[in-house]
Image 1 (cartoon, one colour):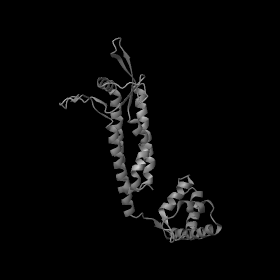
Image 2 (cartoon, one colour):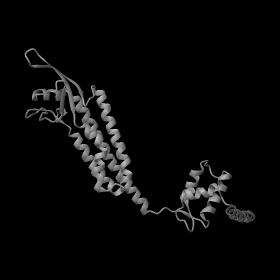
Image 3 (tube, rainbow, N blue to C red):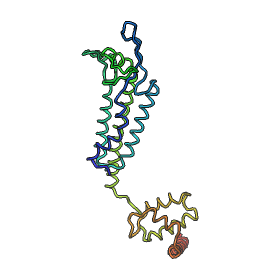
Image 4 (tube, one colour):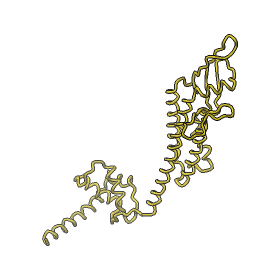
Length: 275
């Protein structure tokens, strides 16, 4: 089981690929004019992806793998602690969302004070790489951030989806925890029989053989019998144990059931005579 003390370590593993991707690298090309000034600035890719489509598919696959890892981890956590684990996961997703932010130029924010105007989002602290291995000046940095704003918008959208889906995990986990608690508080009523498990299995086999029940699946039928009945020594009957006796009923158990069936026939005859 995963203890609360190891939550952060497990979350590091779950978020590892997405966290690595948050170190945004903008690759670009820039030619120099005859007078030595830079011109023809072009983005050649973000995180190695040359098109917006491939970058989008990359982020979607990262999100899907992260959620798959999270799903595999949840059964290893006590139900009462899952909400805490998922809340910490939401915090991680918000940190990833901070990879982008409103675009700024110097100390001026491009976002208008008016809430009616949409924000223009860009990568907050990207790295830059070009063929000449030169560091861009501030003007070039801001230009490149502006040129990759559609990539940033996709990052913001996918990161927002991730946060929303993690919140759904919290709700689902809380709901299932409540249902389980209610099921534990309300004991399952069973039909008590005087048979042993082996005798009950033999009786079930006879019913199955004459097609008294409309079930062709032996395993499913045994599961229902185990769920519905209890014996003096077994309040909760194991489906596997009952099916073992069902598959190979002992002759003495068949004899016991046949004896009771003869009693049932006698009772049936008496009822016929009465009515």
